[in-house]
Image (cartoon, rainbow, N blue to C red; front, side, top):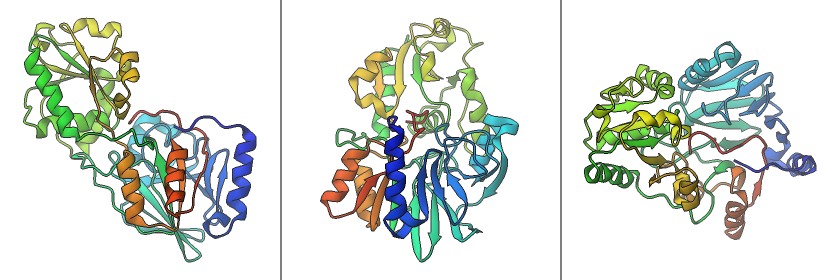
Length: 354
């Protein structure tokens, strides 16, 4: 998520982290990402490294080419499906299981972001650091909820770290989608969803809302839906949209990657009404850019209120912000007497699960 920074900014931050005492003596920001010296591992590195701890399976956190990889069982399965032999030597760790890596005690706890997502808890020299990865505080039927862990340093994302980003209840957005179906029963409702996390959550929310009709699926979404089903998540009837009869999809919900909106693939759909499920749908211009008629503000990231409430709840000694809209959250923390800084990590683009 973070914008690209000049290399001298990265060097300056590395020197600040290295020289300021406490966890900053053993956690370093490098061009590859966050590096833990006493454990000799990186967390969510942006380039191949010898040993990586991975918070979750989205592409800006989990990358191919590492040597040894430690992740939850579900994240390991996602990486194996996505990267094949390039996933690295995968070792699965259960939630709350503790491992000693070098001089660091490590455990993974749920982050509530997607299936298998975890916060990584590091304990060294009497200090505890929690690396949130990406997270949200709202209920998600497809993954365990975020678990708060008291800590000396909380390293948080800030994807939606501006006060303008206050997400509505996802159930309300699903109700808007179902309301549109009733209003336009002759039109297929094409909903753009990211393949990992958002797709599965939207289906689960639709089922919870009582929608029991078959949901049509773009072929690019099948693999990860099957993985979730293997992990015990039920979705009801799903049908292949590519081979379906056009008339049968009148008044139906069709899920596809966001890139399919406006693509020639949509010609197989009867008068498609384009929707997109993303936290970015709060920004009207984003919806216009994607040709979206029905923006659905459904995010798998914490919004501004969730970010600040989490910090209030944890009461950490320091807050480090890894990526997103760092400046506003750093200012908010410092104004409340919580020392905070932006880590300026590179390699965090706008990712597939927002």
